[in-house]
Length: 153
Image 1 (tube, one colour):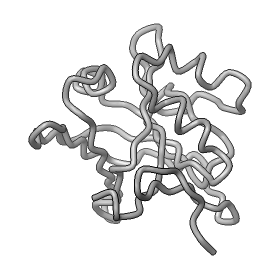
Image 2 (cartoon, one colour):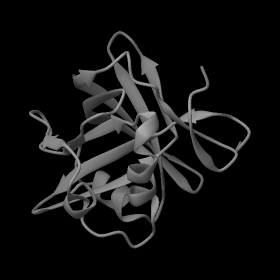
Image 3 (cartoon, one colour):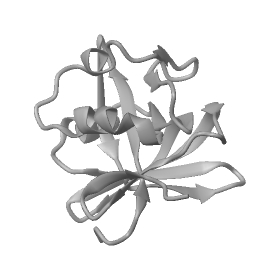
Image 4 (cartoon, helix red, strand yellow):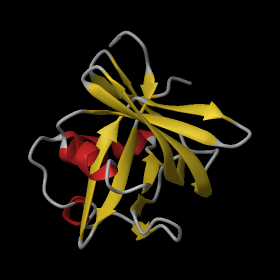
């Protein structure tokens, strides 16, 4: 599957007083009416554990210049998401209170409606609550063959 290019995003969720997040490339649109998205998370990860308890989350779809941010959120044993976004423009989502990273190609806030166990992953299908921002002029960041890359023009 590493041969298949995929967009890169950072999923964030607020867990009581802390913020956590993880880099994902398994994110897809499921439906336009109603607007639904799906994200796949590895079982046993803390973000997956929290998302099984918390239905509200955000995803920031990263742009080509944000590969360092993708790497930060992909590192095992990472600290609080608040520390990972320090020095990077971000804000809290109005609907989810989750951290939204600015400067990407888009960001949305979602509410999980269905959870599906799938082997060593869990699929979270969610209703899109709002599109926080959209920048059609930004170049998307993708993951291909184990590396982050800008979308070729």
